[in-house]
Image (cartoon, rainbow, N blue to C red; front, side):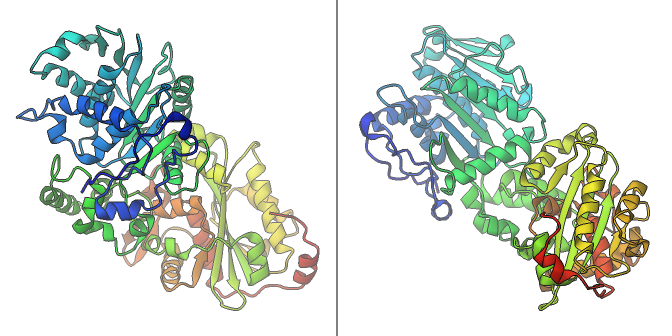
Length: 583
């Protein structure tokens, strides 16, 4: 593990344009072979080795024999250090201006980060330069800071103690020579107030995923740093123990895009992601649970962590149930929470990823299906209003399902813990955020009228709703020349068991396909199943703060499609030639 890549020899600054390509398309092969995830870059080898020597001389303060970082640190982080110091050219331009590292717990990332920042302070020549430790809480930011303080105190020759003034009460380390300093800041809207940093270390970004202002704070940090040609922004984090959201999701997806070569151009971020490929994470056989694969995502194995103890730790957590496995795997293996990891999940979620068909849209359903039914659920001011359309393919007889949801502004103020996640779905187009009190009701009725006028809906039992449906929604639908008989109340609770079982069976045998909506997939992941006698319950109460309304809408539609309905017919050809609306 941890073999260094063969990096290019130093080149002159005039030759660097276009040569700093941070894509690493062979990253999985590198993980399998234990090689560095940093692609070949034209770093200045002399500067890289000089920076590494400074880093390696520092001592780890919280290990009994106080080894140097040269002895204790894994090659994976030494390559990060070399890249940071070696990417500054003779004109003072830092070509690796940002690093995003996704590394599991117990890989000593915080200790190494503390050493990195102290090494940067030692090598710094800028008078009064400001270097910041930033964390979601004071305690987290203080962890890396205290490691740096400990390294100063453990210097046997006393040089560091003479050079640096540690102000523990102010959480600052000041260089007596250059007057530069390291300081702690907590992650909030005032983080950049009065600061003009040269280097910022942001620790545990995953905790900030649900913070509504996180994106703005990161923008502030970047705005402060981008003014300098020699600035450095380092983000080091583990995976989230909830599905990625908000700022964390945005940064992680950007890093993956750079790594995979999908994002090109003026890229400042070097991604270093110790994670399994998505195919391994969603595989229903869960290959990531096999300890033989763990060394790929544990770069410090054999130093700060050992496979035998990690296996024992995992087995202890497995005895506690699915929720404990979810947290452990996300934190130690960087397995992303979602459909692959969800305690007490609905069985159908195991087969949901393999049932995606991105072709499924409303127009696709109209063209390919001989009958379409609808399901609706939710609609409270702090709820989502979920709409589902399920069609029966006229040739294969497969069921094809499409979903969308609407949210009133109240949801974002009342459900702040999922607000950033919902904003992500809004960007995807799967969630419509209402600007008016009746927008959701009107737009749902528009779509239903659109389908009704094709003649593909049955005369009776075309639209299934919760018996407690919003009266205004029923009034709006029936005002569109859709008769009362087309609407049917679908009993909830244990009476939905047949639809739940039917959907999971059809997902497994491949006869139910969905549109691949990220919102719908999230809701499926939120659907916790509870056994009640011979029935199964999937309720909002069981899902807690997460939302499942679009999934219940699916089950309502499945209930109607299970009755083998026939389209009322009569107008499809006219409709296809003269569509009344575009969706």
